[in-house]
Image 1 (cartoon, rainbow, N blue to C red):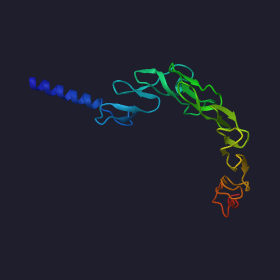
Image 2: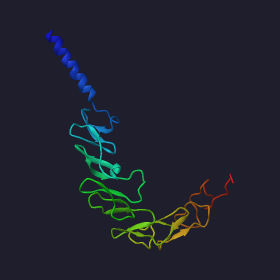
Image 3: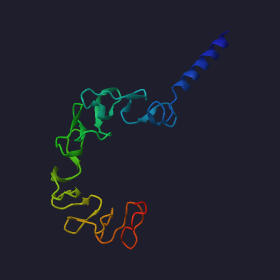
Image 4: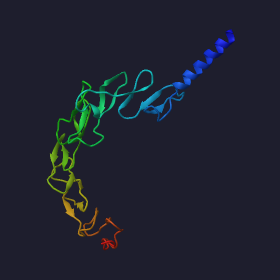
Length: 202
């Protein structure tokens, strides 16, 4: 009888260990430790607690849903916020109190946690001396360091040496990065001789 009890106890222990075995891509776990005894990293909006399990971040406030990384043993305290759905007009960041707030600069698309310092501005603005400034050219997407010098233009334009957006000579052209007269990308077919052939479906 004694041996039966011991055998049953061993079976229960093995079953318990199997039930708690870490499996990648299961229970929101992204990566397990080599012995598969616990999770090392979780997917966004979940964090690892002391038991090596993924717990859901539950941060209070209107922007709490933007929290992508929190304290595993205190899921209400956010460490990193990110508007991964792109729904907010301004970027978000995690404050020193563990809450998600809008970046101090309303034209900022991405800013550092705690400090709120802007890293990247939204389209049409450039990061100049730590602040988002509106680009001087309407066709400009980004003008970092100098609001009057564009670094990236919208499709159908190229950036010249003066930092201005110049339209491609061919109105159908999508991209002419080096010369406005030489198109490198057309919307329907490959360019021929630097120009877009007529649309075969028109």
